Each structure stands twice: as C-alpha cells, then as structure tokens.
Length: 273
Ligand SMILES: Nc1ncnc2c1ncn2[C@@H]1O[C@H](COP(=O)(O)OP(=O)(O)OP(=O)(O)O)[C@@H](O)[C@H]1O
Ligand SMILES: [Mg+2]
Image 1: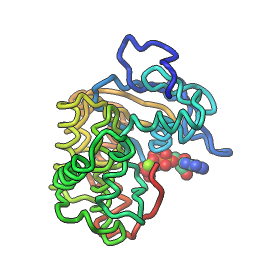
Image 2: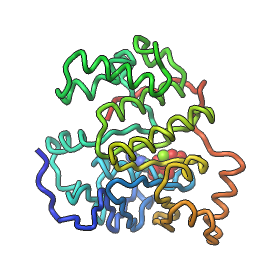
Image 3: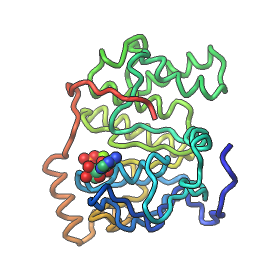
C-alpha cells in the first residue's frame, strides 16, 4: 500500500519537483529543478540531448533518488517509499520509456496484456478485447502474435505506447514517444495523448524533441537547460519567448530533430519498468 499523502496538494499538483539536485560522480545533471505538473494537465519537457530530461522523469517513479530536494507525486515524497511500496506506487503510472523495454520473450499481445492481467481488474475476455482495441489504436492490428524482435523500432515504440495506456492510468509518462515515427504515426500518437487527457483527465508528462508534437499536445512546455527549468509556458507564449536559448532550441529543432531511433533502428532489449 502506498501511504497517505505526506502533504496536501490543495493546488492540485500531480507531480512536483522541489529543488531537485542530482549528480553522477563529478557530473552535475540536475542543479535545483523546481517544476509542477497540475492534475489533468499535459506537460511537455524539452531540452538539448543529455541535459537530464530522462533523469528528471526517472525521479518520478523512484528509479532515481535526488541527492538534494524532493519529488512528490500526489503529495507523496517518492524517496520515502520502500521497495515494496514503490512496486505498488508505480502501478498508478502508465509509462513508455525511451529504451523501449518490452518483454522480448512475450508476444506483442502478451506485452500489452501484462498490466491488465496484473491489475486483476478485467476478465480474460475483457483483457483480450482491450488488447485488440489497443493494437487498433496504434495501427498494429494483427501484430498481436508477433514477438518484439520481429518488429521495427517504430513499431516497438507503438507497442510500448499501447501497453502504457492499456489500463487508462491517472498519470502517463512518455519519454520520446514519437521519435523515429513518421509524421502520420506521430500525429496518431499525439491525438491519443490529447484524447486520454480529455476523456480520462489523465495527467501527462511527455519528453520530446519534436516541437510540432510539443505544440500540439502541451498545456505547458517546460525547458530544461543547465540543470534547471529555464522557463515554463503555454505553447503560444513559449513560441514567442525572446530568451536566446529558447529561440536557438526552437530554430535547431526546426532544422531537424535529434532522433535516436528510426523505424529501422537496431533492436532494443530491456526489462519493463
Ligand atoms: N544512471 C546513470 N549513471 C550515470 N550517468 C547517468 C545515468 N543516467 C544518466 N546519466 C547521465 O546524465 C546525463 C543526462 O542524461 P539523460 O539521459 O537524462 O539526458 P536526456 O536529456 O534524456 O538526453 P536525450 O535527449 O539524449 O535522451 C547524461 O550525461 C547521462 O550520461
Ligand atoms: Mg532521454
């Protein structure tokens, strides 16, 4: 069981980083991150490669712990949870991480069914129907019996997305959900993210290099720079910010995003978080 909230969140913050510092050896990655994601909001985090975006996200589910400061989810200090509590706590999230992390020994359908089965909320028939629905959602009808190793990098990414949203969780975490996808598929994923927020009121935190995506799906865009949040603003405002670091980033991404994965990328392996 997850303990009751340590602090109340009258302002409705779902996720909050408070003065978060994190270094790996000599390398300071986060140097005082303050950020809040309001419940039901879609927050997009952008920033250069290697600036610590994935590190920021991993703190939310307790995969990393801050050296200083605190990360709260629904008012709970994540670092206060023991390993058993963390396991339960992580089930409130749907997440698709940058590394892919599908179970290679399971079929695509089994991968998507995994969180559904574990929740014990659905019958076998309902699970089957939901898996089909999720496959359709990401345009992978008929791929259920394949193994992740038989799919392209982009297809695996879509399976990861489907698995993340299968249980319709209250908080969704996506690390580069559209990198390596063509513009049509990127649009589909963006639509799904928007729909989840509108229909279910899910809180969504997405890391992306794709500024077109960011402007489509975000209520708020936050930019990570030099270990801190440089600015947080709604898309329309963000576009017009005069800060040279923002403008440089927007111009750079307009020339072509930095993608680390393509439809034909080599196979990734990993364990599911
Ligand atoms: N577990 C770890 N041990 C040591 N160093 C790490 C670890 N995790 C991340 N780092 C380092 O922290 C820095 C930030 O990494 P991170 O993966 O968060 O970057 P990012 O902003 O997500 O980049 P990208 O856009 O390329 O995904 C990098 O220098 C990385 O090497
Ligand atoms: Mg990353």
